Length: 298
Image (cartoon, rainbow, N blue to C red; front, side, top):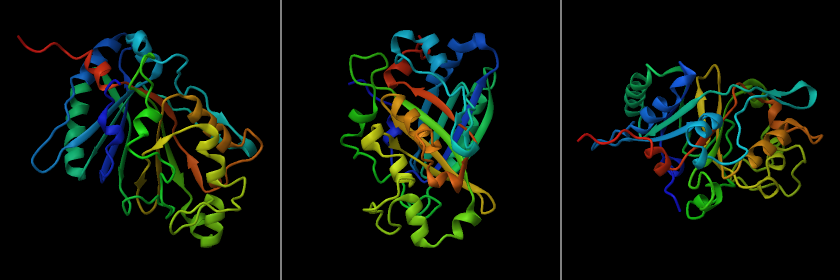
């Protein structure tokens, strides 16, 4: 199996930043991919960072057609659901997800990478994020309960061997803002009915409502998605960065359609959390990215 970008599965990081860029000139696709391939992950004796790089599917397909999954496309149209609920499409050309043990090393790495890419791409979206009580969402519930273990996750969420893009993964990146006041006004029992799990222990409710978040995002129905969500924001405005990896785009797209209510039932959590951004990226294998790196100096 091709070696994936290791940051996909690097659990335990406390600080994160997500940087989304657009090309300054559409003709500079190849130089941008080379510049990204040349980026390094700084490491020090006090800890370093993990870097995950993803490209707009059409951009990657243009530069690496034999290393790109078939029928993969960007988030170019909003997802329209029930009662006027909409998930916006805010597709960009490149994402860098930088994660580390503390924000100072993440901050320094981000500054350096932005400067390196500045002549080729403009930074258009930046989200700073962190770990909240290790594995809690800002709703107070455990996040990622249904994730496969790290022993099997690679085979579940990476493009299989012998297929174009082998070792890569499809990333769905969204920023959701929470209605903290409305959520906080619910009792714990009411919150549990919205999520479909108990708050302590994260045990699935035997009588979960069909509109619960668990029911509308059931991986047994849609396929495996490896979630690496993180909280973001301030006490005034905060929410969740949804970071989901899949071997194919279909599970991700089907999940969004289900949440929006295209099947006739809207995810109850969408009444307390609103998506502000939405983009798909292809995260190539480490080998496929490095294939475009500059040749070593003579």
